[in-house]
Length: 430
Image 1 (tube, rainbow, N blue to C red):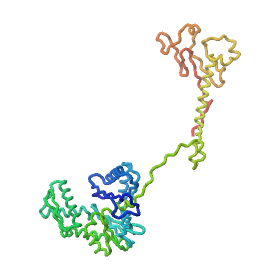
Image 2: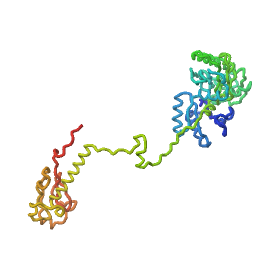
Image 3: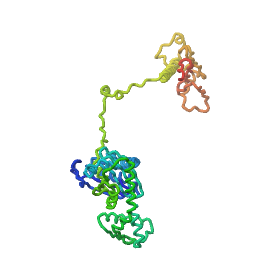
Image 4: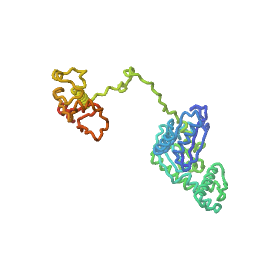
């Protein structure tokens, strides 16, 4: 992942991890536009996984923890889980040790110059411990491109672009000229603003101060690490510039290793570190109640029955008692003579379909008091009159039911007794 491009590397199909040649990789470079680089990485990986079946593992190299967090969020939005994150230094060391370029070097300086800046790190190749690492944006690939652009405009061959779009196009031509100078002594590129003409000597004169400044920074980092180094690993897109390796070797006094296609070292190292991530979970078969006893640990056993609190038990007792009281009232009013046998006092009285008064409270539980009925209906009215309707007419005077009276069409009013609060006292509040 770079500020200018996202590079993807994949070993050739049919090669095992220990049989991959340094050049047996497929590469793809995706320019970074206005889209965040993390989102571009996630989308590129998602498209690659969909279009290329058989990919078993994915590794993404990151520079900082903040960048790693942004990558995880972007991959989650793409619903990709089979991947791992590896530090850029770990990926670079993996590839350098795999190719044998740093064989015999126990303490190494990694000089990574890309489009956005320079990172200098001192690493122990045996333990892969990072002794010290620093980054600066004083020198970068974009800065070198700007030096070429200003030199071309100052020469008078190229007019200054009038808008940001033209400026970006000119920078792109200057970048291409810089890359071609790694293998040529001179380059000429036509553009809308004019001819970009650059020679190797002129280019090295333009960037010499910046390169020497980066070499001085590298030496200061080594001094602060308090450990001697035995080599320099030069990676990144700008590692192709021959002048940088010459200046570093002169300033450091140790061999400078420049791998082939140094801008893809981190991508190839990440591909070598990629391992499958087990994320698929097996669906468990349904468990019968007889199998609960065989499970372990104990929290997998059958759930215990919920114990009812005292408040729930008291509420249930009160509900049953109220229902019993209503049933007793119905029996006392004379609607259940066929079920229960009446006492001697009530058997001597003539029975009537409509009682004229409410029985006394002695017929029920001695602790329950029944309020007397407020209205009486004569036997003649109960026999001759039709059953009352839900809505009474305005001409007939209807009895006003009390708060404890239940009115059922076709039946006399039923008075629900008021239960004294001391009969079933509630438990004191906690």
